Image (cartoon, rainbow, N blue to C red; front, side):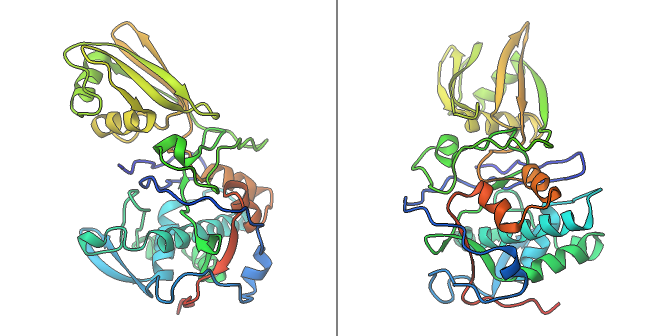
Length: 343
């Protein structure tokens, strides 16, 4: 699906990834086994049961229109700096949030390596996979802190049943995360569940966008999933998940298709831009010759909420506590072929 979960504004500038839906078999819940102290002191961790060489030392990344072979930890560093800019935060908060993002970026790469194999590379540098901007390594004022966080967590990934997880994240859940099956359909993923993210010091983004009916009708007609014909009468949320996200939306006009909330978001944003409908946690109201979408949050809502993770880092929560708050029953493990960065 289209990647469009870019963030912005405020002390944290998160982006979040927006990958395709994946199905993971259910299994017993495991305890979160190791804390930051073990990671920071480089104590050997139990490796996940992945085949030797499953994650190559170098990842083929398509960046700026070309394919580059990038060492894993260099890739993690370039992704971390692209995904998070922790402005006006304390040094301790910066260190912790970069540790969180480093583990996420590395785990995402481990789970999704070869995602673009049919195109001759592993990962792209956009939110279809996760952002990767190597130029920031030489220009960002946070480069030193990010390097140190990547080095402290070198080789460490999130695991479920000894396998790297699908480490999804987004900019802002709006107060409630989403389960992967409610957003994209398919089987439930045991570690990606809907739950409140109601940190007392956390203010979630609220937004509003007004779309003229004629513009919206043309936008919907441009995609076969949402074609409504020559007349658009109404949009109605038919089903919501436990966190208030629109799961099924009825489109009523000459034709009356029913589509998923994320499909509508992608279709509208393809035409109006990624900053139009920021999430599916919205209401829809017709006012005269326009539809008004009012919502909260930014991104698909599955996995880790970056602004929520930042709030937890501010109050001093550990790496494992922050990750464990968003991924149910996971553990930390070091990849069997982990290589410490040379820098």
